[in-house]
Every structure is written in C-alpha cells, then in structure tokens.
Length: 322
Image (cartoon, rainbow, N blue to C red; front, side, top):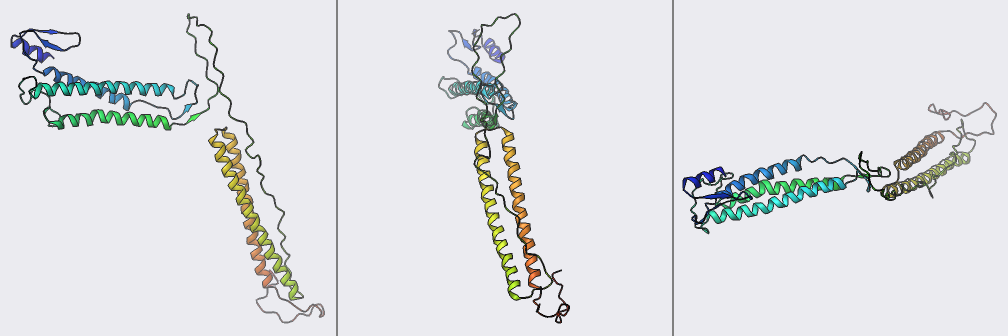
C-alpha cells in the first residue's frame, strides 16, 4: 500500500484513502494500476496462514459428557463452526483477489503488465494459472483438510454419562431471574446382566477304580465301556458351556451398546472367566480318563477260581495298573 501511494505521488496523481483501505484515483486518473491487488494478496496469505495455525492447534478432548452436560461436544462443535465460517470468508476473498488481479494484468482495464510487478508464487507469475492453483492447494485445500480432520476426530470422540449437569455459576452482584432447570437425564438403566442365563452345573465324573487284575474279560470290558461313556458325557458338557459362553458374549455386546454402567460389564467378564475355568476342568478330566483307559487296557485278566496266591506267569512289563 505504501508503494502504491508513493508511485501515485511520483506520477502527480491525487489519491484518497477510503475506509475499506482501497486506493482509487482521482477523476483525472483514467485507470487503476492494479497494485492494490498485490497488497490484498499478501494480507490474505497472512490471514489464512494464521487460520491454518489456529485449526492445527485446536485441542479436542479425548472423551465428552453426554448432553446436556456442560462438558458435552457443544462447545467444540461451535468452535469448529466458527473456524469454518472464517475459512469461507477467506475463500470468497481469494476469488475476489484473483479476479481483480486478472483484470488488472490481462488488459481488460487497459493497464500494462510488467513482469515482477506482482509477487510470484513458487516461481509462477500471477498471469500463470498455476500461480493460483498452487495458492489454492497450499492454503485453502490445506485448511479444509485440517478442519475436516478436527471435525472427524470430534465425531469419533466417545461420549459418557457424567451425571446431571452442573448448575451455572452466579456472578457476584448480578441478580439472575430464577430459571427452571431442565429435568436431569435418565440414569443408566439398572439391569440384571445374567437374567435368563444360568451357568451349567455338573456332577463329578465317575472314574472307575484301578485294580491289579480282572477275573473275567467281561469285567475289564465293562470298565472300558464306563470310561467311554464318561468321556462322551464330558464332551456334551463342554458343548453346553460353549453355548453358555456365546450367550454371555451376545448379552454383553447388547448391554454395552445401551450404555450400561461399567461394573455390569465387569461382572459379565467375571462370569465368562468362571465358565471358561469350568470348561478347562472338563478337559482335564477327559485327559485323566484317557490315561485311566490305557492303564485298564494293560491290566491282565486272570483265573480267580484258583487258590489265592497262585497266579500264572505274568509278563515282565506288567505293572498292575501302577
């Protein structure tokens, strides 16, 4: 702007300064030199640069309270909206500066253009379309991208129940008329997280005792059949526990989506661990039964009608179930 006034004085042209900071020539000056657009461009770059810094440094919370609490998302939503409105004004100003500069440098006003009169950008003069494309990319597009990131971050921030909203603070010396406070939000639902669900219970497994020998093959076969029946029963119990764990997981997901208090979810996690422990116990018993089956299979069958103390020659590997 100072250079504009200096050039005007040297040319003997009278100028006046308007409240809008635009410099216009007097009646004896036929046309504007267009240099006021260069000053406006420089000011615009400074303004949008400051706005980009404000958007970048705008701090959001990690989580918010649910409305109508004073720590809800309302405050930051308004703050980002104000930044968006400022950016819209600067975008319109950019279009006005580009149009005015183009008119002043491309002959529509009859003004002559001298290279270097206007500030270039990234090596491009104002008469080059790339000059304006790069300006828009580096400032406007960058600001829009940063603002969108902030808005997306705010939208993703979790909202939790923080209790009823705090009453507004009264200023000393100011008498506020009584205002009927809004009704408090309903408390989180009180629920029984295990309603309709019951952890399965089972009797202890019936493991046949180990003996030194069997008097008949039928006795040995009966013991092996009992082992097989017990393993089948335990496998069925494991299937019941798996169904119970699936129902627990579905119920927990349902309650979490309804925003129940955290201790209800913790109680369900504890119940799931108890059910998993029961399932692990069933697997351990199956392993014990398999070991017992192997010992029974190695137990000999002897003729028990003979005198006590007389046994046939047994194989050296015989261990009597030990």
